[in-house]
Length: 366
Image (cartoon, rainbow, N blue to C red):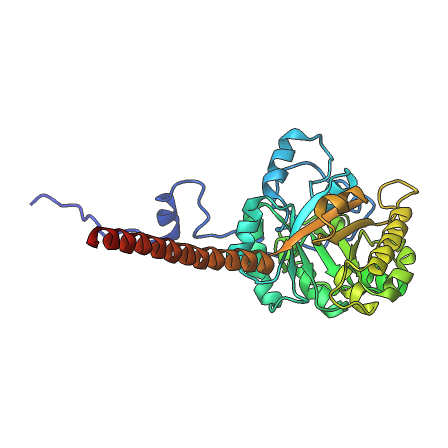
């Protein structure tokens, strides 16, 4: 009898065999540890603290920044230029137009961005929402490429830390009344040794959850710090406040200023307007020396007696023309008014037709 060969049908089950069946390159079975290993902290040096960074495509440093502009700027500007954020736009002499957002509606925030506002102030001082409510609005604004500014409820290190970790382009501190309180506000925005901001930059949204390795070297140059002056005491010290290093913008508060002067809800009062002009002149004088980073820009609310064009003509570089609640209120009231007026007109037209009809019937019945 002829000998027969034994053939093994046991399939190979080794990792090498299974790996050979996968398309190259493959790292599913043997993942690289470097993908998960945290990258070592790089101390700040003169090279990493410069105000300009290589003009390369990367994850945006501020998620509330203008993504579309950043992408177009990559192709249009020269190497080493700064991204187009609020600070750089102000330094270029632009006048920016914005909206205050009190509803904390991501939908309305998205509409505001699509409408073309240069910035939207998410107001945690007078709006009902806090940090968790602000985050979806930041997402919505980032999707439209619109800069977000967070107004905190009070000037404190805790509120500033939580707000800045979300990655807005700007932060607004209310009721700043002295140079000392302005210095404190700036310190809340800076990491030690320049300030007292708590550090969790490797995991927060401001740094792309740690993906933006250049965040520590650029965050100061890309953050707009706004101090709101809205009292008689604040106006008294506004020159010194404007001169504080790190204060980029003075936000005037005409409503609270009028209240502090004894003219509640009367910002158009002659005495209030006169004090406003004096305050504006002092802020503008802080920039008279010229140069980038010298003095503060003027920011303000448009009022019925003081429109956006008026503010611009007096040297304001940031103008807020409306509040989302006010826009919806006005539109809603007008809509209801138009409907009710149409009913009155329709009823009036119907009555006139009935009178004409009765007159015709009476005429023919005679």
